[in-house]
Length: 182
Image 1 (tube, rainbow, N blue to C red):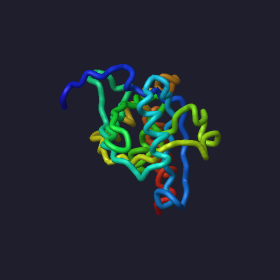
Image 2: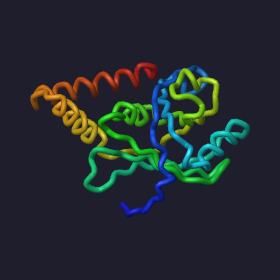
Image 3: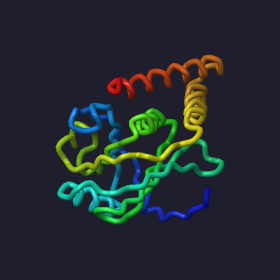
């Protein structure tokens, strides 16, 4: 993988999350909603606003890790239509491992700017875009489990208990994200 230097304003901090399920989109699958702060990246705000009145656009997604940083994962989104721009969404695995799992399982996500609402219910009828995530994240299961074990160990659970809790957490999240696909 090639090393890439990225300007700080290309990062969209996650300010909230949730999920939407509707028969109209995604065949009724539960699709994660990622709420981001677009205040430092006006191109993404413009993309979301323009997208409300144009046909679906094109986007290429890529998952990325930083060397020696197993606490975070990044989703790179390269849009070519209706606005040409690139952005990165950083996910803290301690906080957002279940959300990342949902994105991977659903192969999609809604991107909602925080000015459309700080939670899904506030932004339900406000601008957001549905993005197909075609990127594959090699080794996700191992990374997710390691992150969850670390989280439970941090909460003072013994190692064997933390491993069992991580396995149960992953099982429950997988059930949640796949419940509507059966």
